Length: 342
Image (cartoon, rainbow, N blue to C red; front, side, top):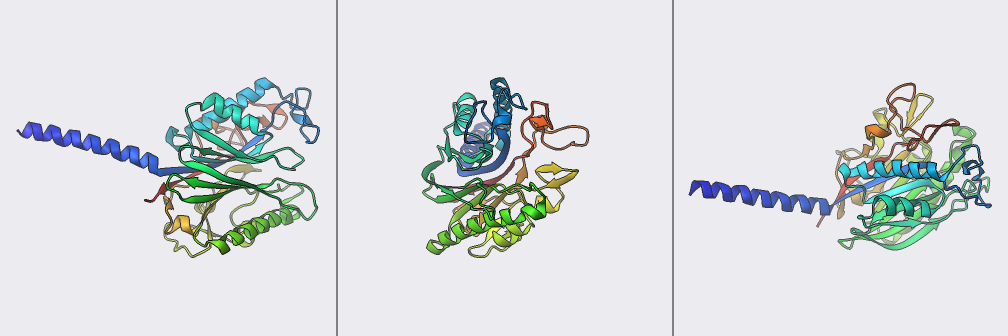
């Protein structure tokens, strides 16, 4: 009799564990962001400055190199979220959507991944996009937000993607790739301040309609969390597990890693936290999409990280200067875990 009871208890525990594991995977949400570093095709676009990335250009960019880059990047995406892949992945530096479509069709045929994407006026020909899990989200709308720089030089859109999750909760995702530090950080600072101001205005308009929004802001900001563009003009605040969130505020989940000296981009021996995840107070406080505290992470599988030399610890890029080294990207992706609260 005791043996039967013991077998019953073990069997029941296994069933309960399996149900719990399935439920937790279904209820969890993994959000990531990655600058994919010049993911160009090999076709000349006369309206874009893509001549460097052509078969007869400086990079001698061929379909074979594109295929290897896509394969490498698919390995990283597959590695995310303990091998389950992300549910939302903001992407930057992609020339055309067909490159992402190819990546998904070739390497994720069993995933219901979909793409939100808009071609931008950026003269370099690189855009922002969002890969989202169609089993957990449906697309409501895509809104490309134009940023008019002080110089009037065309730059990337901020991509606003309006989604609804499986529980009926609406989510606003903003994918960013703010103007670079070309010409020096101080000289180029007004451009990133402009991008921050434009995004803040959009968010304030949304808050006027509803002050309990699920807002996720991801991307490559070309600034650190403590720079004025992010801290003052976008008006974000550091977040730790002890932070008491306040209404209508934005919280930077990457801040703790940043002040610990870590980053996503190594420049002249210094780490910069250019890639970040920022969320609304609703997500860190009382919302039905809840941040799992301390889950923000730098996504660093060993196979994509340089193991020696002066770039040790950095992501292995596609090119080192002019030398082709067949890597992944010059940015380390970032990710964080959330849970759908019933």
